[in-house]
Length: 265
Image 1 (cartoon, rainbow, N blue to C red):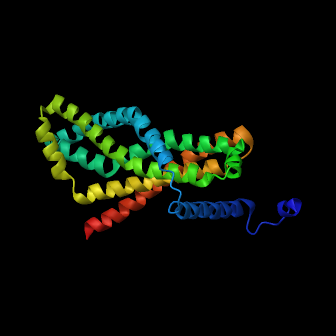
Image 2 (cartoon, rainbow, N blue to C red):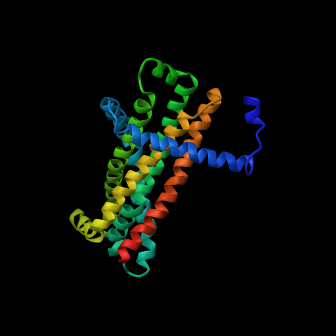
């Protein structure tokens, strides 16, 4: 039977058939997640544990990255604005760029690299060492305990990390602006909040939720379907990062088009 399945003629080509088979497998995986997430028992302790891992343990890297982004973007924007005598617009420019795009995107990419690979490797190693099969034998639902908890944790924590990154990036920008233009903290943040709208904040939060879900579901899917021993674990971790980053850029583009259309109404 296995030989017959291997010798079966592809409908289009092996690569195209494999692509559509992968899409169907991913769709079933996502559908199973939404089915399991509403069914008890709810693994709240594991969700909290994963939130701690994703949120608190990522703070040092997120803090450093956000701070550097704020300073670098401010210093890069200053020469262009100074040509027109518009350096006073720096706080407004930085706030719009950080809140609308840079904060969510930088945080999601950092989380995809750090947590996406970690989730893929962790679940992948459990898969190839048959720990997942052992959980099924012991009457534990491995999909709910491993997948649902991690996807919920990334979905909840990425928006929190994005807001933190926005704040750190703005503080880095303030230090640069204060050192060159002698702008006070109050004046800086008054200009910041005058420039961003409610739509900017809502779109940033919703986009962050989408990014968090993508990082979690891709990492879990790649790890849950890994094979071929330790080689498969490494491949699962690598492909989880690459696929998550690719989808994040696609989602960023789509959300941007939707938000711009709403803004034009």
